[in-house]
Length: 458
Image 1 (cartoon, rainbow, N blue to C red):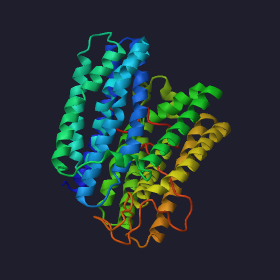
Image 2 (tube, rainbow, N blue to C red; image 1 turned 180 degrees about the vertical axis):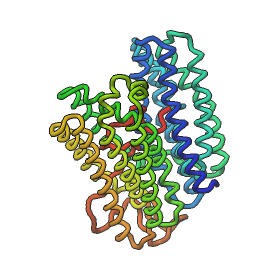
Image 3 (cartoon, one colour; image 1 turned 120 degrees about the horizontal axis):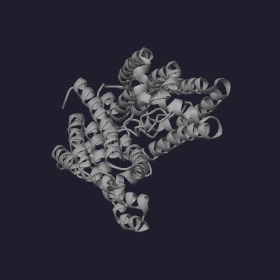
Image 4 (spheres, rainbow, N blue to C red; image 1 turned 180 degrees about the horizontal axis):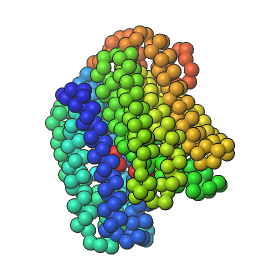
């Protein structure tokens, strides 16, 4: 098992490789297809990113919170991977009907349906390896995925259709999936599996999937509404400024996806909170440093990155940089809540998703596009503050400074990794405010969603 520092490096590197794969897929697909085929490819690929985000929320985010005896954790990992494969299998049955519908979009959706079990299952293995404290295996599989997908797409003839591109993209996941399943089987041998555990009423993924839907839908609809009802250029400026912070999104995605297993290794709730706070401070400092770099960037380089959008996006850098610094602290506060009491995240997610939308629209009404950007910053800061206040209260009331609730259903008798008096993860404190929320998708819903898609998009 790697040291915590090595695991952290592997986790960040893995998320970087996943993000690079996502960008490379779109670039290569755009070069190998005509404008109409790429439009269909992009539309269907967006459908995939939504399905991927739901899978990560429902399976991955719940999986990384597993704690207890090694046998229990191994069984949970195998069960999560098996559930993903089984849940995606009906898409293959639907492929012929989609193909019969005809048209570019119909055939492209049929191609996606055929490869969906491969791509989603390979994604879930990343979270299984994080839970097993072996992120180096996730990194290995993702490097193999990147090495396979680029030649597969580049080998397609110029003008290839969207369905052909999607099939090549999906089938190229086979080598990475085969290696990941072999490594997972090797390190969980004899653990057994129970995919039905993901359908239980107390499965945390249900809440995380709702959080994903609420957070992403709220921010996306607010930005779209701003463009439809106010100024379309505002959307371009906000998206352009957010795009410049792609490296920060990679770090946030890594923290959200692989942070809980690392925090669980710190040895207690208060230690986990201190480690998360330190990580949040480092990420906030990185966001400030990256903002300084962008502010000093010559206009020529900025225009090379964003074209004519650079001028309007550059005006938003102070607000967007402040938002990302607030998101850094808030993300780590939300991670602390996920480790301490996972079921406390949904109520505040609902409240602050609405509040963030109000801040966005109110800021635009008061100060135009810069006001909207500062409104997003205010929403992120408020949500982060609430998450840390909630975490502090949990630490005071959870039975001691080092009390951490183990997620999962409570057994009728003490089992591995649980003492008779331990609190369940789904138990709320008898006294306390509404829980603080964290995003199932790694990007803070107070800000525009990363245009590259959800974490780990391939």
